[in-house]
Length: 292
Ligand code: NAP
Image 1 (cartoon, rainbow, N blue to C red):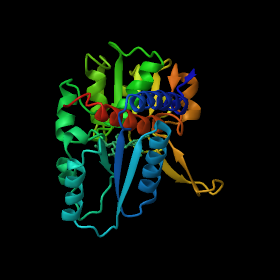
Image 2 (image 1 turned 180 degrees about the vertical axis):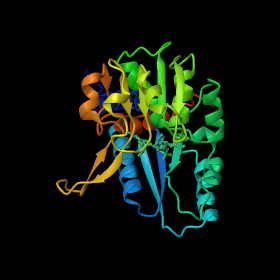
Image 3 (image 1 turned 90 degrees about the horizontal axis):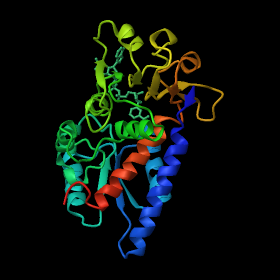
Image 4 (image 1 turned 45 degrees about the vertical axis):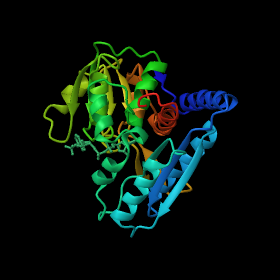
């Protein structure tokens, strides 16, 4: 069984990005600039945004953090999005989700200039991704593709089962695994209404779990020799940990890992790759790689 080390792979990619930024600086260009908008003080969001700022430092990017209190109005947030859209010194930006209930996330996402939408959530990027055109691909599925590629995992013609159909993970993952230019696999997507989910999983050469339910994938759901990618990151209470919780994946790692040809751990698998792909998207934005 091969452990797919997302932490080491992400560190390597960040080094590669930093080298490219050094070359840009040496050529007289400015460093890529990623801005993040954070609303409120949700613990998870604070952690994600802090990690994004740290990743920017590792990649030698400029980063800006724009904070709003929980009671910010939708109009105020839209005005900030408009300002960032127009700012020639900002290459890409994200609005950290979730947003408070009084703000329409979809409205905010659609207000972001798709050419700066490094999260890849804008319908133009989602649509272009679905038909195989160059675009910002959302970071988690992009990170999984990169892990599969860097670990030489053959996906062509394989049976891939994606568990979960969210807009940020399950759906784009399934579309990318389906496409000729990416996974080129035979893809099945399962969700909470799927019948025969266990049998579908048992048939998978590549199983990608994005359910958000700890240890959902048990050993009897995995074909011997399968590749298992665990996207799940649920905080479960753990008094032995300094923060009082630990991250648990969607896969019962202890019992599933011995069956697999390759598997991602949680933490240290998909998670570090996600932030790293945001950096890669920002680099692409700075280079105008997808859009003029
Ligand atoms: P989500 O929006 O809650 O979607 C979960 C999906 O799983 C839904 O499609 C849901 O089906 C399905 N599901 C839930 N319970 C199920 C069950 N019992 N049987 C079959 N399907 C079931 O979650 P998400 O945003 O995709 O995230 C999934 C997990 O990945 C979470 O743990 C999240 O924290 C983690 N995540 C990690 C990263 C990372 O960088 N590592 C990034 C993003 C997300 P329905 O559609 O029918 O409700």
